[in-house]
Image (cartoon, rainbow, N blue to C red; front, side, top):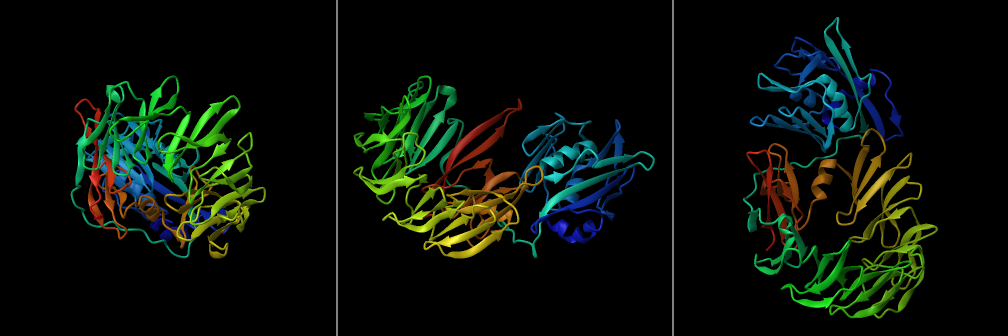
Length: 533
């Protein structure tokens, strides 16, 4: 819940009907009143700070942007580019862009039809009141055609805005980013030479230049270019691990052509529809057949070690890989070893690679886990289970009513949420965080969990970006990205317009350079992680 709504919750509930959704979510409705020709702007009859008059223009009530946004959300962040006369506003995770010269508004990255004209007056940006309905709807506030009422006799506008909020006994802690951070240490200074740079791991990078017919290069962590693929000779280059790179040619569809080493020397042809990264010395490959696809595995020299006899397969992990022997690829999943021997009976609807000694499987009864002996350590009874990380996993009951944390014996170590109705949920393995959505409002209402319990959206945004001790964070005053540590200290100064996650000590970054003709030049570079030795 936003702090502003905490203070006014009691008075809002006295104003009229407040819908309640189970025991977790309620809708709070606030009334805003603007008196034209005065500096009087009220929220629930509480006068808001306003140092310029509200006025009429071409039949539209003109309200100052900063006053209105901060009245709705006291934590709204507003960045004003005086030279370009463009404002960028953050309402939680939703960005709003207000372009005065172009008379354009984009809310939550969606352009909206503008009523009237945006205007700068006495150094302040004004927006016609009629536009606030669509802006706030896009930012998950409840408004309809009757939410704005104009009283011509009194010369005042009444606006009613509803917001879905989570019922909590106390506010969740939010991270505080402090410090300015140090200047970045570059492996590759931001340059126009590359349209894209991929940090593919193991100290390798692939750079691409689209303007030169997909000119591609491989360089290493010293910045040395190891291989160059002449324009037109490769549609795409991907890293497979084991110092192998796959070159894709474009002939009506993208498919692998051959495999090279880091210097671009051809090692073997890749006569398959698809090839995946190496895992435990073997790479999964796929070929198209009349009835679908067949899967097998090759070694680092390109030799087919396990025949193309599976309708679906996954990567090797802990010495085994999940495969399906059904003709359709649906069901009959088991596990093979690196010799191709079936070591766990193919009887599951689906199966994932082993992790921490357990594999996630699905049966008609639900999802659970088996061990390397094929024993059901955690019986398939859940609607969803995540992979195990650090000895625990998320689990959701089939009716979506309980969200819990399990240990490797299937014991419930913590109950995260008990719902009164089915919810949507999202899990990203690389983050090991759970996002739960209440399907309410334009975007829905979200809650965020780690294995210890619920935490704030701001913490979710910070923690979901962590890799190698740093997370890319947006400085809302400048609109630039920097990197902060787990304690909230800014380690690398916010000077980037895009900042990727660190991998093997490096991260790809981008800077946007405005040009005189209103175009933008993208400069891509690579920085080093200063906290890694």
